[in-house]
Image (cartoon, rainbow, N blue to C red; front, side, top):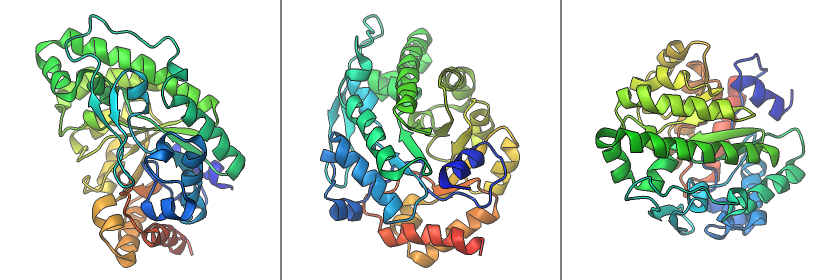
Length: 336
């Protein structure tokens, strides 16, 4: 069973010879930027550097897949958001919003898929495929519709609309969802095997579970149903209050952080609706811990039934290569 077959089967909950070990979230680290000469912020816009940096996490760390791009601003930028491109160890961020005053003038770009950095991401998918062949999975990352909608309006206005202007709230969610469907399908057509969708603004830290259930879940279902390939939904924070709702969003798998303390209990909650990726702590174990701590956390996740062993959230750029290799080694030792 090759790496691609293993991941696709694991995401569907089918039997595999061993649990895949990779990252479904951000993978780039400074140590690999230095090794490859493909560093941020250039690697966010240059297809060759984007691909080289993604492949390095497979070649140097042993992660069983390659993933790009490295931020949640590509689609937002194409839709009219202003972006600060960050630094070598800081991701791009949204600094300006096209629709803070309302939804009356929403307009989809005439050539969405040819706008901004989207063409570079598509080209990177093709380069990655050429580099790793057909047996290594390619994971494309993108912002989810809830986060995109909040970027278009601003998080402050988006949250205000959720309470005081529910019609505007729904309108901008649907607008963002349509763009997400088009972009996700284009990523799959360009060579991605899986689309990973971090949607941090859907977190219970920001949006009430009742809002998730009644408004956000139907949008995420529409998104998942419109995409022609396997998808992973990642929501940051302790998603215990919305775990079963996430399982009903029609994604193949969900990605959770270590803040969900009871992984075995989470597995029981979602049953056979979805599989679970995670949940080795990115900040407290992979970044701040040593190799022994990484192996302990990874082994615990495996014992608790994780379907895909992965960092709980995006890998911090200053994470050492040795700790990522230790996560892979822990999986190998578990099956030895």
